[in-house]
Length: 472
Image (cartoon, rainbow, N blue to C red; front, side, top):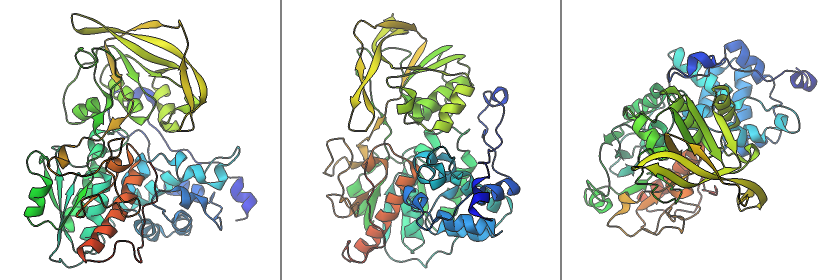
């Protein structure tokens, strides 16, 4: 097929549940490609000599490689090509913000064109393997004498366990929550990431000898020093960023009807029943804010809208998620921010807000919101849910002095992810701040290599395969 013919093929759109149907349940709303659709989409790839899509992927998947195999009919070979670099492709293909990563770097997406649907192709390959009952497991090495404790079972911890277990290192994962998966399980709704997908990844880890301990909080039930004394030769910290960042408004934590984004999602995903009332205001422009609003809508809140202090162009959430949100009837109030919580007898009745306008760009590259004078207005509401970011909870390191940055994340060697305590390594959101699953996976891969070298008494920098070059 000639380049001109490939360029003439339009991006293939997946089948989605209707809005009326999907807002009543938490089933996955986007269906995977059929074989014919996947093949057509794969034929849009130009097989660039210098594939910028691979550079845009935090894991550095060989995207042209697996797409070439797919369109030649080698779906199983395509799966193993992905597995050369990715430890959790079924998850990354569903939750990664592809438009900001691989697809955002795709040559076909430059200008007015549409990028190759890399995420959907990856998902098709993995789903085809599962539906066909194909072997998804890679051989594990014979057990060695060394053992490693992994604190946190999110994507970083899963990645460390995957790579170490396949080298014969005995790994024990300690998770404080009653379920495994960290933010994947309690921070992402099931309509975006079905729980069976997460469970399958942990079954694969268990088959390679990884021990799972949930309901154990390191720093409370036992300390990092206890782990060392119990014979663990190294520890990886992958506790994520589960502490909600506050708005800083008076009575924010004492008013009934004020709940923070990741706290709300965690409680709902763990099965708690929460009635937010009919009118819900969500503050923020990221995926957590979008997930909160769509979850509240599915649980009976009929009037849900988002307050965001910038314009839609600056929203960090995935465009696909914003599109689904608006399809489902959630309104976004742009250029507005809350300044005062209004309550009667300790219960929320509304929120006082101000209008904003965009000034000069800040350190993130987005234009800084500036308050418009005398623009105050009031919104009546039953609940307000700030979802403006998260911080790292430092329960795990109680009793052990580990250096932290001024942002409260763990300070690590920027290339090896070793902390100030030589036998403790860290990666994922507790190093980067709230970031993508793919970045956490890559940091897990880097940390695993560093831990292997540490256990063998080798220099952590010489002749490495992976170096951490991601910035927060």
